[in-house]
Image (tube, rainbow, N blue to C red):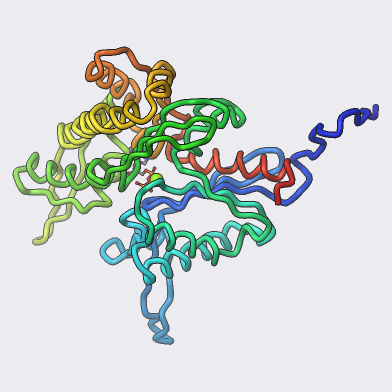
Length: 358
Ligand SMILES: Nc1ncnc2c1ncn2[C@@H]1O[C@H](COP(=O)(O)OP(=O)(O)OP(=O)(O)O)[C@@H](O)[C@H]1O
Ligand SMILES: [Mg+2]
C-alpha cells in the first residue's frame, strides 16, 4: 500500500538511501570506527600505533600497524597520539599513515559522511594537527563534521537515538590522557573542563610501580602489561588476585600473584576523579551557570571513555561524589564506554545523511 506524502517536511529518506555514515574516534590508545552494515552498525577498533622496520631483503622501510605492531615491536612501537592529540608535524604524519592504512583495511569509501568524536582540550596546535589528519584521510569526501567526544559518548547512554542532543546533562570522559568534564545544554558545551593530571595512562604507570613494590622489586612490568592488567582485572564488584609469570634474565621463570597493585591504583583514580569533579569542574559550572548546575545534578551524570569500563566504577563514582557533595547524585554509563563515542558519532552522521545535510 502506497503511503501518501501529505507533509512536505516529513522525512522520506530511509537509512538505505544516501551516502554511508561513519563515526570515528581517533583515541590516544585506540581508534574506534562505527560502520553501517545492512540496517545495523558494527564496530571496529585497533590500537592507535605503528612501527617501521627495515625489510631484510630490500632494505626499504616497511610499516606495521595497530595490535600487530604493539605485539611484535612492544619496545619501539609509537603511539603517536600519546598526549591525546598529534603534538607536531611528525606525529601528525604518523597519525595520517596509521589512519589511512586503517580506513583502507576497513574498506571505507571516500564518498561517505563521517563524524569525528574529538577531545575538548585547550590545545590549539594539537587540534589543528588533528584537523590536518582528518582532512588528509581518504574518507568523508561527502561531508566531515566533528563533535565533542564527551557528547558523542553520552549519546548511547541516554537513549536509542539522539536524545542526548535534546537534553541538559553532565558528561565526564575518563580517557587515557585526560579527564574531561562538560555540561551539555541541547548539544551546547558549557564550562568545559579538562585535566591531564587524572588519566588512564597515569594509572598504568602507578600499577607498574605498585607491582614492583608488591613483588619486593622482583617484577618490573612495562606500561602495556600494566594497562592489560588494569583492563583485564580491575573490578570494583568482584576483583580476584591473579598470577603472572616472567622470564628471568639468567633463565628460569618467576611466578607472582598480584593482590593489591591494580585495585589500589584504580581506587585512587576514582578518588581523584571525584576530587576534580567536585572541587574544580562543578564549582566552575555553578559559578557560570547556576541553574544548569542545579538541574544537571538532578539528572544522571554520564561517564564515558575507556576507564568507565571498569566494572562497578559507575556506582563507586556515584557514592563517592554524593558523599563529597553531601547530596545524592546519580551516574550512568553507555553499555560499551570505550566504543560509545564512535557509536554516538555514527548516529549523528546517520542523522546528517537523513537530513541530506551534505
Ligand atoms: N575494559 C577496560 N577496563 C579498564 N580500563 C579500560 C578498559 N578499556 C579501556 N580502558 C582504559 O581506558 C583508557 C582509554 O580510554 P579512551 O579510549 O576513552 O581514551 P582516549 O580517547 O584514547 O584518550 P583521551 O581522550 O584521554 O586522549 C585507557 O587508559 C584504557 O586502558
Ligand atoms: Mg578520548
